[in-house]
Amino acid sequence: MHQNNGAIEEIKPEFDEMEIGENKPQVEPKKVVIEKYRKEPVTIKGKETMKLILEVKHPDVSDRLVDISGVKYQFGDKLKTAGLWLKQDNDGKLLYNSAVGNLLRFLKKGKVKELPGEQVETVTDEKNYLVVKAY
Image (cartoon, rainbow, N blue to C red; front, side):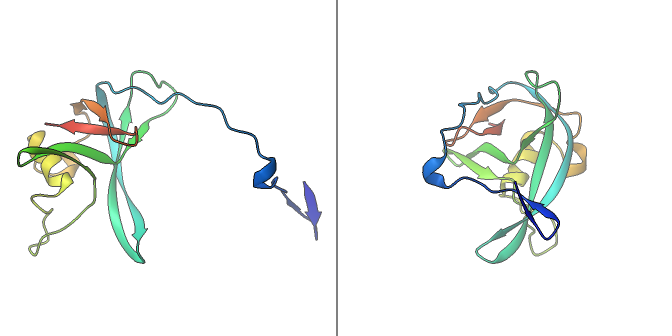
């Protein structure tokens, strides 16, 4: 710690002196319950967009909810993994072929507000993050 004009400032070690962190286990894909959701602003290439974050109760995590912001779904004859981006069509409705649109249709829901209480399967994506299985 370093004190600068009364404020305490943490001095972080240089990268060449840092040790490797622990290999913390990820939660495994299992059935989860959507407890609640939130929308979160994300800036991509200087443009702000909104992403849906599902806050789920995972059977292996008792002290907190786990955030899931992606879905794996059937798109044509292939499986596609995508973020839950909140995209609108020209009528101001959720885009039909978006990841959120596919998730809602798979779960037979008409609106995002109908998701809490729903039990869903999860799988991992190519980066080993949990995503909702919607196929």
